[in-house]
Image (cartoon, rainbow, N blue to C red; front, side):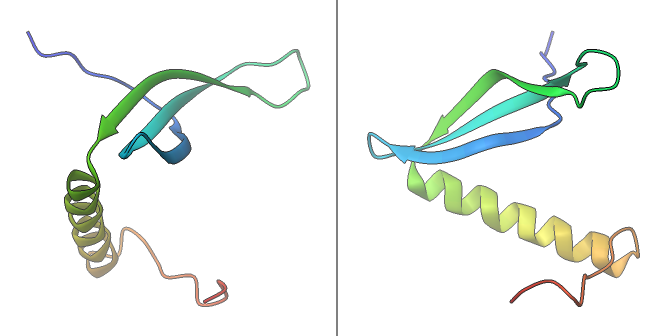
Amino acid sequence: MKKEIYADGIGQIHFAGNMVRFDFMTLQPGAEGTAPTPEYNERIIMPPMGFLAAFNSMQQLIDKLLAAGVLKKNENAAS
């Protein structure tokens, strides 16, 4: 059976030991009336070439989502 991992986002990306490290996090409920707090629970480590290939795949998916109208460009974002 394949394992699925859920993450609300990437908390940090850093480069250490000649490897790119993605720290994935989930948001945990805070006390009533407070913002959720991030909890780091998974890390993916890959070589720089793997990171570049993954980035290229993500950029291609972003382009497809833009073309399909699922995402919209933020024209006011800083360049």
